[in-house]
Image (cartoon, rainbow over all chains, first blue to last red; front, side):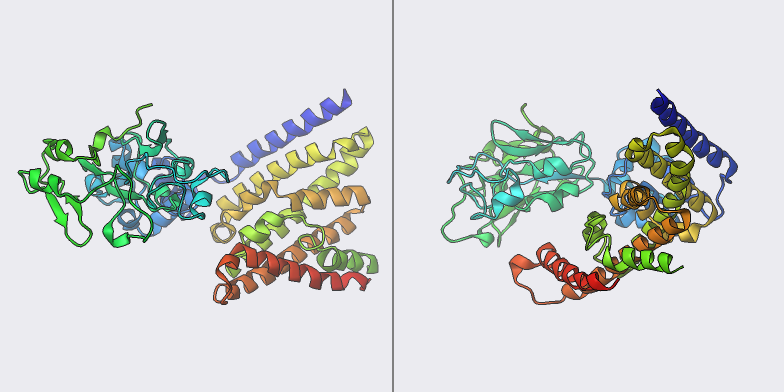
Length: 274
Length: 191
C-alpha cells in the first residue's frame, strides 16, 4: 500500500513541478519568436525528410535563412494549400508549390524471374549483397520492402501479385526518404504532374555481362516514341530509353497501349492492386 | 577529501562508464562521428548526471529509505530523471538560447540513457553520502566525455584511413573501441 502511495505521490509531484515550471518561466523567448511562429505552421511529425533533426530545428534554420525553403522544402506542407499559405506568411516569401512538389516513382515492373533461392535476412540491402539480388534482372525490385519501412506517410506497399513496391501517389509527399533506402537505386523523384511512368531500370549502358534483363522490362523497341503524336516522348539514344515531356503529354494513352511489355503505365494508376 | 578524489578518479578512469562498465554505448557509437557533436553530448550527459544524482539522492534519503521502498529504485528513478530532463530542457530553452542550441537534440535524447540511470543506481547501492554521490557523478560524466572525445577524434581520422572495404565504417570503429578498452584496463592497478 505504502509503495503505491509513494509511487503515485512522486508521479504527481513530478507532474506538478513540470506544470509550475512551465507557468513560471517566460513564454516568449527573446530571439525565438519567429522560430515559434514558423514551427507552428509545420506539420510537427518530425519525419526528418528536410534533412534537419525534427521540425523545430527546421524552423530554426528557416528563421535564419528563409531561402532554405527552395533547397530543402518541407514536402508535407507543400501538399496542403492552407498550411502552405500560413508558412508563406510566417516566412515572408512566396512559395511555388507546383514547381517543388515531387512524387516518388519506382522504376520497376516487378515479376522478374527468381534465379536462386534466397533464405537470408529479409531486407533488400542484405539480399543485394549476394550476386546483385536473387532475380534475373540485376536492377529488379526485390520487393522486400526497405523503402516501405522508410516512408513516413505509409504510401509505399508491396504488390503481392507482381512482387514489386508501388507508390500511392495520393499519399506520397515526395520527401525522398525512400530514394536513399533502395539499394538498387530504382526510386526517382519526379515532378508531381508526371503523367507516364516508365517501369524499368535496365539500361544498355548499365549492362552486366552474364545477367539478362527480365521479360517485363523495356526492350528498346521505340514503339512509344513512334506512337506519340505530340512529340512528348523523347528518345534518349545513348541509354535507349524514352523520356517524357510532361508539358506536351496529353495522356492519350497511345504509348501505353503500344508498349509490348506493359513497361509504361499511367502515373496515377501505379498503385497496388491489393 | 582523499575519499572523494578516489571516487572521482575511480569513476572517470578505472571504472569508466563506457569502456569498463559498458553503459551508455549507444551515444558512444551514435554520436562519436564528429568531435563537436561528441563534446555537446558529453557535456549534456555530465550535466544531466549531476542533476539526476542530486535529485535522486534526496528522494532516496528522505522518501525511499524512511518508507522502506528502496526496491522500487528503478521505476522511481526513471520517472524522476525523465521529468528532470524535461524541466531542464524547458528552462534552458526559455532562458539561454545559445546553450540550448549548443546542447541541441542531445538533451532530450539522454532522458532514457542507461548511463544516467546507472549512476543513480550505483550511488544508491553503494550508499554514498551526498558529496560522495556528486563526486561519483562528476567523475562518471567526465570519464564519459573523455572517452567520447577520444573516440570521435580517432573516428574523424579513420575516415581518411585506407581501410579494407569490408571494414569501413562501423567494423573498424568497433575494433578501435576494443583497443581503447584495453588501454583503459591499464588503469586497473592505479588505486
